Image (cartoon, rainbow, N blue to C red; front, side):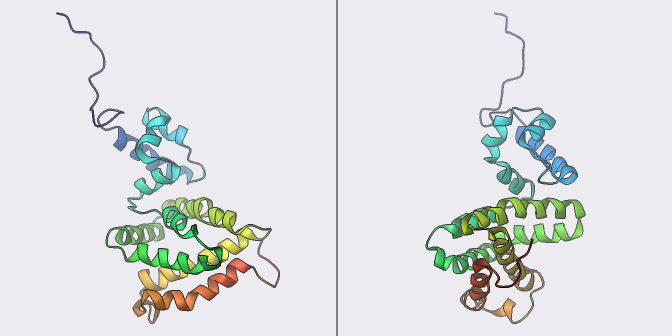
Length: 206
């Protein structure tokens, strides 16, 4: 019996065939480092990897999921934000700080987040992609939750405080913040985030 010639059979555990996921990651990393997060589209990555764009959704779920995979994040910042947004808006600052400190102190997600920060500080192309990622997936999302004319400025100010926690507590390990308990961090810094989200009384940022 003659067998039909054609493409080799696909790996049953991989809809796109052997090596598909790795090709997508390589194409995405190249795009992110040359075009930034804003300039990278799923269709362009799919074309570079020579796969159907639906496979990117299958493997990574979304553009932010693809970015997280490229950067080897086990827990992405938008995931942390999403978990904090659920609940009473009056206690959002406390939840933001609780989610942030939990993610950075987790034995799985913490080292990956720190590695991303270090890499961004050392490589300008990575820094550009990370900055655009945070602007679109974190600050913009938080601004939607805050609402109002000053939403983006308020969200940016709040994220600046959260970034300060990351650098002082987890990257530079400055005292006394590095040695404080999570409860102390939340207690002392939640008021600053409350003030940021409430908006300035002086001329606003543009």
